Amino acid sequence: MRGRPAVLPGRGRGSLVRGPGPHSRPRLRVSGARTRRGGDEGDGRDLPGSRPGPRPARRGGRTGGDTRRRGRGPHRVRGQDTHRDRVLRRLPGRPDRTIPAKERPEHLRSADAGPTTPGPRTELVGEFSSAEHYDAFVARPPRLRATVRYPRFGSPRYGVARPSRDPRRPPHPRGTGVSTRPQVLLVSLGGTIAGVPDERGRNAPAKTAADLLSSTPGAEDLAEVRVADVRQMPSRAISPPDMHALAREIREGVREGCEGVVVTHGTDTMEETAYALALMLDIGVPVALTGAMRPGHVPGSDGPANLLAALRVAATREAAALGPVVVMHDEVHAARWVTKAHTSRVAAFASPSFGPVGTVLEGRVRLHVDSVRSEFLGVPDELSGRVELVWVSAGADGALVDATAALADGLVIAGTGGGHVPPAMAESLQKAVEGGLPVVLASRCAGGPVLEETYGGVGSESHLRSIGLVPAGTLGPLKARLRLMVALAVGEDPVEAFSE
Image 1 (cartoon, rainbow, N blue to C red):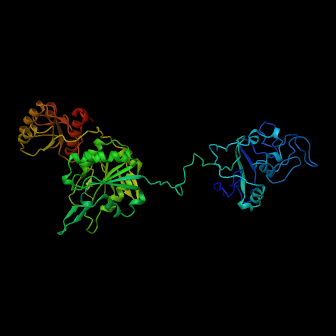
Image 2: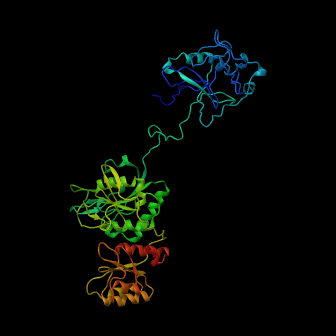
Image 3: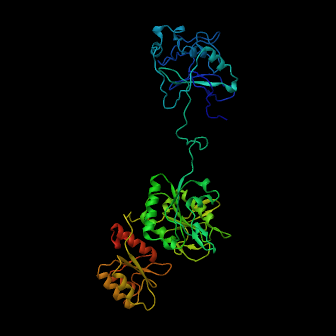
């Protein structure tokens, strides 16, 4: 089996690279020309110092044609130079021993000829210093001999060259000093996954991102992880300005070369943060949010497993086409569809309308879809607008709508069924729209879109659309609030922002 050329110790003016077999002999190669031993091919590209003249005939051989002895052995034909002659002719200070000055190549006539500049596929590593050095080289056992290979013909000096790596072939990951693991940014915002018990055993976030990384076996084998702590709080305290600060931290990490991002977060509002990031990030790298349903100090804690799965997703380039995702219980959920469906189960997250877009199984990320619809609206300077959410219940009047219309920059209505409100609330909504307040209509149901023309009458979806409410389509009320907030922050028309 042929291995990579190996340079042997020496100072030769030829390439000291291992030959193709255990019995290889020194031979002369010229880059860009055929290999020859006599230098009389007649094409004007004779080797420096070769003796032009007619082709010598074999002793007792045929006449006509090429009668030189072919092969790679060190045999000498009468009238030809040996390989040793050609090499020694190029030793410093010895060209005049063989070639008259007037026949000497120009680069050998000059005493101050500079060093050879290696070509794109050669590298100088030494030279032959004497005839004794050359004799010692060729006296090596066959398995240690090397092929004498020169740089391009006509260079001002002959040096030891070896072929560079084939550019079509990627470098071997071992021994290059360059890691092939992706760079992943780990950002901590607190939550149950970062919790430690107090004196009464109640959980409160206190662990940093570095603490979480050190407590997750195998995490550093997946990626080169950088850590950052943006907040240290329970997710019930996360606000839209905190989400904006997180998006800014992620953008900065990507600009510095991170190829994936993992965010540890409390589970109460994780779905909202994931969707807010989807609205504000268009960075082309995977972003995975994860957390824990069980604190780290109780048996069966799921934090390390969730963090390891999230790191696997963040290290998977194909996951970037999904936008920010939630990775919990070895499932990958898109930000638009995911919701926390249970208060305390380990498998608390689900995507009722779509299902998970991927899974983590046997240490591999298996994606069920190639991509999802982009939710990106823009990057606002700040996210401080006030958008309120009014949840519709049976018998509700317009008191909440009237109260919030005076304070809010926008309003989202979580209507019943396909997008309905009681007749008493419909009148207050019409006044708010006429006053210039953007009002978005969503459904409080876990799945399904807002209807368009199924029902009629005051408070029906057709009536509310006719008075100026903007339908949210399949987007739930919590995420419709964030979308309206970001749309107002970047100056986009709400009707365009919610068009599907």
